[in-house]
Length: 203
Image 1 (cartoon, one colour):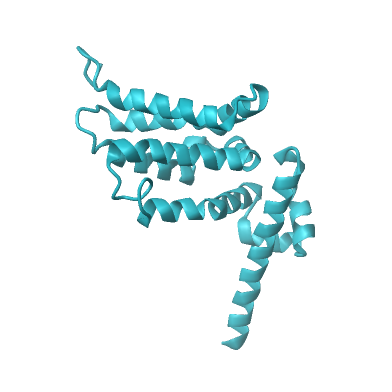
Image 2: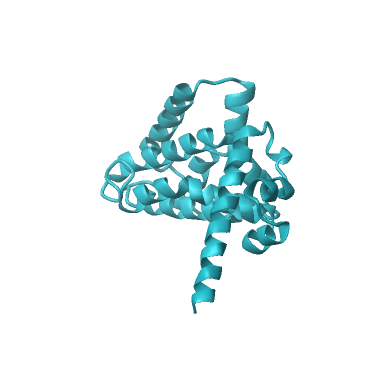
């Protein structure tokens, strides 16, 4: 029993060391592609076998690091106060949720880009994307007169894709606050538009 507990503690300690090493490497390196599993294992002081057993592959490590950084926002969304928490009116909560996604990706540009570009399947199948989409769709459904909350949630999240944020922040050098303001304006227009006259969801 004591040996099992010791093994579990070692696994937790190794996992924390790997996440800390990956976090440091992704922060320092110019490109996400410059960070290899061997680099992470060396900095964390663990063997590559330990790394692969814990996370499966590079994509699994990226997802774990992403989720670890996202945890404070997840807690705020699930049980926090307004504007992110569940008690917030939907017209206020939708812009706040998208602003949180945008700011998180701005603060984690390299990691977000590596995760969205490096997956073996569609980014729309990623757990974090499906979670944000489900949340937005549920909040949008609370807004009277707004048709097709499923598509609207997809369309709004498209404005926070990591490759778009990288283009705007990198190539176009758009200031952070301007990007936030433009996203807020866009979300406000979408929420205020209502259903298109003469069109139905089937059309």
